[in-house]
Amino acid sequence: MSVLSYLKEFLRPSWLKSFFFAKTAPLENPPYFRDFPQITGNECTNCLSCKMICPCQGAIDVIQENGKWMPYITYGHCVRCGYCVEACPEEVLTSGDILDKKRLEGLEFIHEYKVIVDEEACMGCGNCSTACPANREIDPHIGAGGTAMSDDVLMRVERGKNRVLHNDLCKGCKVCMDTCPNKSIHVVRTVQAVQEAYK
Image 1 (tube, rainbow, N blue to C red):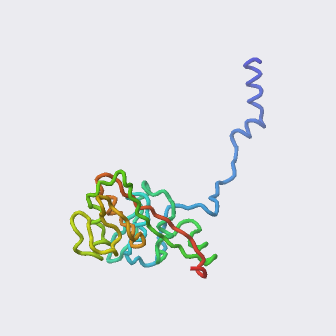
Image 2: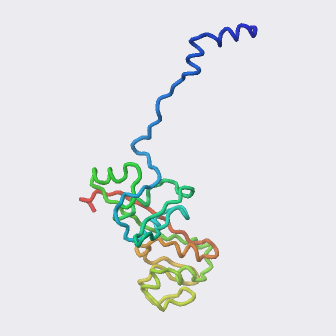
């Protein structure tokens, strides 16, 4: 086929019109789409639940402006998981249809934390147990090596390894993770939606 034939084909009025005036359907977000969290206007109590549940370091912080606490989202770190919206008891944040679905279906979001210790990597230094705010609240005299006489603490060092005794006491602050030199401890965050009638 010659060049002239190509030109003849592409210079047809119908082809030029379809090429230069092509239109696509407008993009619409699906109803389950979760955008970056937005402020609802409800009062923040600085409980830090949003910050504790967030799986991305540096994605959310709670700052004080003009005497009022307010969550601040760093978009470059946020992955739009919606955990902060689900964890906030005051509904200070919203994203997508999370809060609408919560009200419509009568849901309550229950968030939990689970401390997992890699026993092979743990060297029993006790940094995590000593630094843990929940431990210090229960046993202010917890030993420098993470040993504690109380069975009520979240975790303590036993036989040279850190042992988790009461996961339900974990508030998700991640101090144990930050203080572990071997990165042998990890805080897993979970959020579960349950019907308020079946709590």
